[in-house]
Image (cartoon, rainbow, N blue to C red; front, top):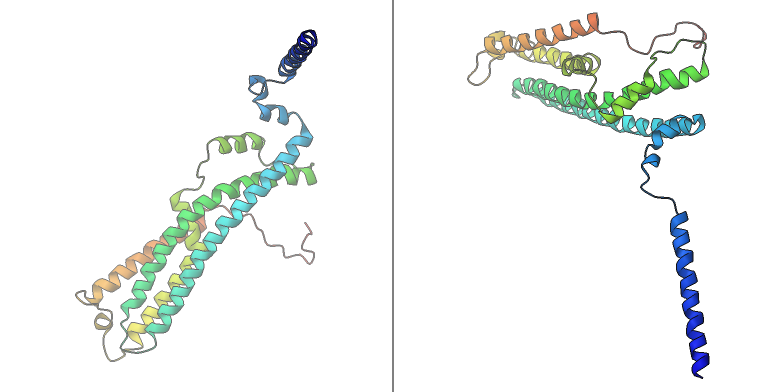
Length: 259
């Protein structure tokens, strides 16, 4: 009985010893998860065209999703600006007793929305520029390789921007763009409505009287409004004269794809 027990214990110890050797061998064969040579996966993937193209496709979809989100934020600001402008005009012309300076409040509100949209546009432009680099220098070059590349170092540009994201459009230029494309026509509508409100609605009184506000003379009010619109017009003129043409060009040919 004692001999058989010793033999059994010996067999168990040998099994445990063999399992230990097997586990040690497995640990030795398992690759090191923190191998420094395996950390620079980007450099390895850059040498494989198929992997790189696949990752660029995912990058494009991700950036496009961000562009869509920020474009929606821009449209939301414009929507609220139009809604407020329509409400103010409706109320201002609904009765002679309603004060004209509510339209001036509407002008100030639109300018506030313009600054908000300027900030959002600068963020939107970050993702839009990345999308345009991929479209111009990857997809367009793939479809038409005979044309010269728009940016020779487009990969480096995107890489630098992914490492250190930066706003690419100045505050002044973003302000001028949103003013020219959206808000200047809105402000002109409010200006025309205000001029009608202080003249046609009160033909028996002078414009100095009808343009006045509590504690502020009509001359001062008109002067402030005129100065504001002259400044906005100067910004618009600078934008139209010095801003490069946009990416979309009109095609007047019968065939829209004809060169």
